[in-house]
Image (cartoon, rainbow, N blue to C red; front, top):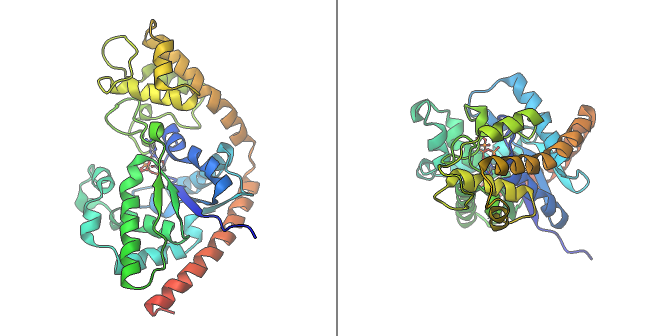
Length: 330
Ligand code: AQP
């Protein structure tokens, strides 16, 4: 008899142009995991509506993200790929966790809420943005997830998920598995090209913040050329040169070379040579990736998402039946 595999779950919000940070920090790590775990990858559209958005654009982006998952190597024969809003149990469990396990004081500690509400002020942010981590906890706990592959910015949310699961288990019944985050050291936090103090982000105001996975060759060349560098001209991997360190991390992530090897290659060369080398590494990955992306057919992608919905819904309904029964809600 085959052993039951542990489960892995992760997702991306359709909230802008997916960038190499999303790929290196999260999606790339999913590819290997799908071989050893029961893998579930979600397009978390309910998260994306917590900030102002355009409905038509959202619909387009959901398909775009599904295609990105597939082009990156997520195999629908091995993994479940689906859209969050199609499985209503996510919202049901989020409400239940809100009511039974989450505290206002937990959510007030979340740095992502503070960062994201900074522009308009906390008082003007949506309640959904404030409560986002509880919905994320529901996404994860609904599927008995053990491993959550994410970038560093999500670690605090995973910690909260663990707290909510423990609280619920202690208060009622041990229904939830306590999940663990999995991050990749060199690429867990890719910084913005135009400011190494902030992370690369798809909702950034300037498109020079990120390299989108679907940017054209010309745009990618231009963005890397314009990427900020530190003063001086020596290629060093050091915290004193955060912009260069970030670019070396990107180079290392797209090559089989360590930061030390990269520094050696460019030790007698300047920033311009290094940037040319970096552009080559990024394009070596993105050109075939985009070719695969462009070859995917919308109808087939919709079929994959529909099949994924059926499978995810089946699992979610079993879990929610247990939760409802435990809480006297059935
Ligand atoms: N800069 C990054 N470096 C490494 N990993 C990153 N991730 C995001 N930015 C970086 C990881 O990508 C996954 C999907 O992210 P998300 O869609 O949940 O949203 P986010 O974390 O808030 O990322 P963005 O790109 O900054 O989106 P917006 O601007 O919409 O908020 C996650 O695993 C995340 O850690």
